[in-house]
Image: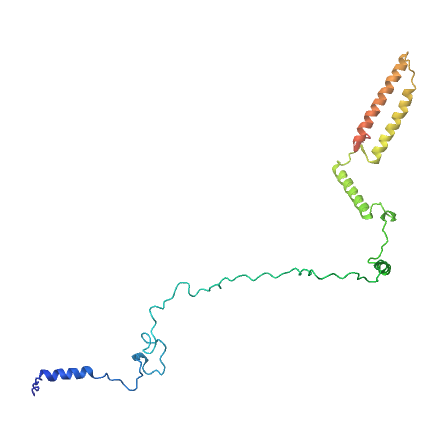
Length: 243
């Protein structure tokens, strides 16, 4: 094996000149790259995105540290208050002092006669209608037919309900009600009237036992008839035994 060539030591002056030459030599830049530094990830792209690199470009102006965003800077601001406009005069101006009104102007129109003619020639605003007098109608004050029919139906319903409440008729028993009961009361009143006439014709002096007995019998009969009439007038039906 060949041995490595021995290194020749350089003098100190030559070494310092070589380092100085390397330090002052310009940095190599490829002629295919743009002036601004482009990261390796964007090499080969035709266009570089704005701020796509680390920080602004070399030719872009840096933001000054004195330009910071102040509080409420983007809020809308009201306009400065201004003096309000004077109000418009709504009343008509006064008549000048030297202007005199027109006097003696009149028209030859007779307003009274004109109003009379207009009133006589005007058409009526409404048509006169005949007054309806309901009291002169042929059936005024009468109950309508539908109400008469309704009352008849209600009376029949009440009569049917009364008949349903009554017990079934028994053998040897007669039931009087309605017209029959009223006829019985009328006969009792006629009998009382006839007995009362006989009672009134009795003599004032009852000096014999027969007269006193006759007076007592008439009083008893009259009292009995009065009691029967009073009882039958309040009753709706009466049951009479015919056995």
